[in-house]
Image (cartoon, rainbow, N blue to C red; front, side, top):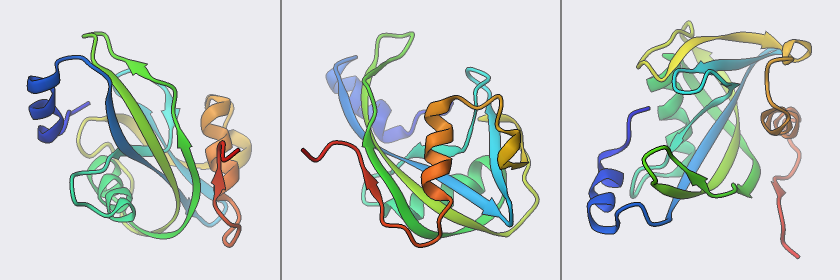
Length: 157
């Protein structure tokens, strides 16, 4: 996966120390189907996701990631979930703490395809066809199904 230039610049200063980043997940619906892609780095099936660039609105980042990774245009309709992901330590030792903002999106145009190499396969799937998707990602989809539910928040004690 391509690492944004601003992250590389920060890594030059802080090395592999934990880096807090804001990430987005775009749960894209087209009728009764959801967009899923198979990640090139680990083979996992999941929704389109990525890192918010400095100064970028998170909803705009979700739209951008869909265009970059899957070659489709989407419209964000609501925030579905806000959660802090467990710390990730990459093979090179870099540690990241992602705040994940999950957006429900609706397909606008385009035919999904692996556009930038981050996904090896991408397409529309019925909700009953999510057998290869980890429960963690199924939960994101489930919380995004309703068009008008309030956002869910993990924690908040």
